[in-house]
Each structure stands twice: as structure tokens, then as C-alpha cells.
Length: 334
Ligand code: SIN
Image (cartoon, rainbow, N blue to C red; front, top):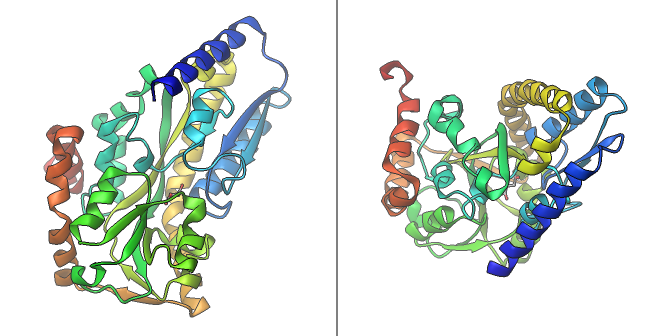
């Protein structure tokens, strides 16, 4: 770990000094790498960012978008950003625990009532403070992009928490999500996004948790007989850049990109729900997978089963941050 940090720090120095020494070559090439399909909210956002950046900074900026883990996958993309091999990422908020434990907040199950509450928290002072909280590690947050709420899937109908017992679930690289499945007496297995389909197909894992856009675009429904519409947690993104790279950009370029990102963020966050609904309908049309709807009482049983996870992570996340997130569920009492 220490060696990796030394390597990262050395490379950051090299990247930083090369930014200072060289005048920017024209055009400035911005590599945006991500792990999902072009059709998803993040995929669409990356393409819109490219389009607007190249339109408004013609000849000055060229954006290369690498979807579907085609340049870097989970486990490599953060290192690549830190050493300056890629310039923009939008990892799931579940993938920041090595850099900022407070971001684990977003993985706490059943924390937010709906995406409007997620949005209110992200726009609050508490939410915005997380964007700048990793600058000492060389990471600057540029905004939050929505995907949506996660649904459980398996080859067995999951109606009650007991149904999940003993099943192996693919999880992102997140201690909170690991504990969430342990609380259900299931077996979590951390696995890169790009390996999930094969993991499910071969039975290395039996189930997963994803928003509909990721289920449909990764063809997860083809290898899962049931989806429980649990809406039990959020899968959103932090758009991030390498701090030295960003601060080293010519001011007018940085300002224009900042405006573009604000515009793209609004667009992505407005469209995310519709894209999830579209993909839910496509899954229904495919006829491969039954969608199970829970009554409020059934959903409450899932909530109770995973509630102990909150207490486990309260120390790392902070009671104040959890409180701020809960406030976002009740905007009228703020
Ligand atoms: C993503 O939407 O970027 C992937 C999330 C995951 O690893 O499940």
C-alpha cells in the first residue's frame, strides 16, 4: 500500500510538473473512462460532455470517452486518474471508501426515501462538502450524477429477507454493501462490474443489486429469473478529476468546462429516472425475468433486517452526516 502511494505521489509530481513546464499542447486531450454502457445515465452524460466541450472549445479540447471498462475497469481506474493516465471518471459512490470513509454514507441501505431526497442531500452544504474532501489525495469532485435506486435480483424469488439466506451476491468493492448482505445471512462476493454477467452466468454468484439501466445494459436479466423491486439503496456517481490536472488547465478552459459540467449534470439527473423506466420496460418486454413488487410491510421487513449496518458504520460516516441525509427525506422540516 505504501509503495503504491509512493508511486502515486511520484507520478503526481511528474504530472504536476509537466503541466507547469509545458504549455498545453493543442488540443488538450481529456480521457473520460467509465465501466458502463453508452445507453446508461453515466454513458449518456459522458457523451454529452464530449459533445459540448468540443463544440465550445473547438480545437482546444478533445474528449476521448472510453465506456464499458474498455480503457480501465474497477480497481484500475482510480490509480490511472491519480497518475494522470486518465482525467475524468465517474465511479459509483460505493467505490470511494479508500479515499473518503464519509462517502460510505450513500451505501447505507434504506437511507434515502427516493431520488428526490438523494438529490436534496447532494445539493446541501453537507453533500457538497464531500466533493472537495479528497483534494489532499489528489481527487477533486466536480458533481454528482444520478443513476438510480438498486433492485435485488436472483434466480430465486426474493420476497422476504429469509429468501436471501445462503445465496452468493455480487457486491461492489464496499465494506457497507458487504455487511448489508452479511446482515441477511447471505454471502457477499466483491467483483468488478465487468465480471458480474459471467459471475452470474457461471453460478460463481447467484444474485446482485443494480439499477434497471445496469441490469438491462449488462444483460443481467438474461441470467436472473427474478428481480425484486426493493429500491433499497442508491447507485449514484461522483464525477471526479485529478486535482493537479484540473488546477493546471488554462483558466478559460477550466471555466468553460465547469459550466458544461453543471449543464450536463442537470441533464443527466433529469434523464436518469426515465432511462431506468425505459430499461425496466425493456426487461419486461424481454420476458426473461419476473419483477416482484413488495408491499410496504414486506419492504419494511427488508429494512429491519439490514438496519444494524447503520450502527456499524456510524463512527466512520459520522452521525451528523447521517442526520443531514435523513433531513433530506423531510424537506418541509428543514
Ligand atoms: C457503475 O454503474 O458505474 C457500476 C456500478 C457497479 O459496479 O455495480
